Image 1 (cartoon, one colour):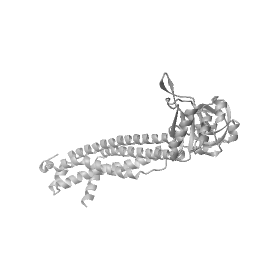
Image 2 (image 1 turned 135 degrees about the vertical axis):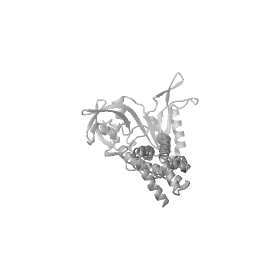
Image 3 (image 1 turned 180 degrees about the vertical axis):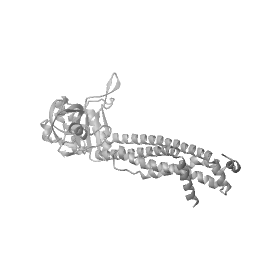
Image 4 (image 1 turned 30 degrees about the vertical axis):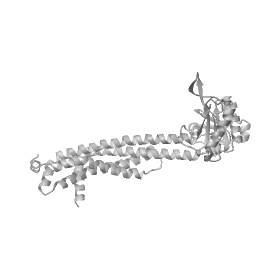
Length: 399
């Protein structure tokens, strides 16, 4: 009963100063909403990265050219040394590699009717569809025959589709890539962000990209699919042995190529995103501390304004513990109401801005309530004890 009475008195006190109460609640609510927004955004990003990691698998190695050197100093530019023959020899010679997929990528301007878009063109082989789990959601992938015939066909990513075609199906349409006409035979589904935007790409036969578009014979990378993820060390040994021999490297020379697990890039981004999210949550928690200071300030003002009320309650029998409980209840009520507003507002903001399904981070929602309650208690302790220690006689004579 005493608790319910304190809660009733707290609500009445807060309603007496609506503007002050609202401003204090906003300070708490914004902090809680910021925490939940970062948590939900991090959860969505984590899911996308995990989905991407699962699609890539842990048994695909990416072989890329090494860094160039000038006057003995390594430069940012890559060397031009990977060839299709390298990919064929690795596939044929290694007993732990299923298939090697050569790729060549470069930027290009694309056009469709009155629209144009700069994107990345990747030439590869039909095995890319299986190794990289990139089957079209509409249309088909190109065939071995189209690879051998240097056919001018392509599969476009979701971003390219949106920029050039909008909502219209692209399959069967013709687009210009570097002023050459290509037939769109497939559309890939949206993948989402990774270390670059995989949706902003066009895929075509490797022979077409190398010979018809860019006039090159080197590769940008080789994807080597292992028979088992446990074969990483043996596959790495085979790749180094074959490429060092093909590139005529002396024993004292460094590799002029780099080998990485394809999921290494996303795992690195995953760790970076987690660190960034933790940092932003820390900033949001600091804003909650500022909100707690606001509660303490409001409670101190409330004590100063209600000295006579405190004296009357003490005179009719209320002890110090009751006064402390009353003002602590008011402080906790401010924190909890602000937290509730922050939770509801944060979820609504997430749904509106992020545009994903409603994700309810129960762990953080529960912790947000505890944090707000703790802030209310901590912020209300000093004002409550100050109120309890007011001299009764002085309080009764206070105007």
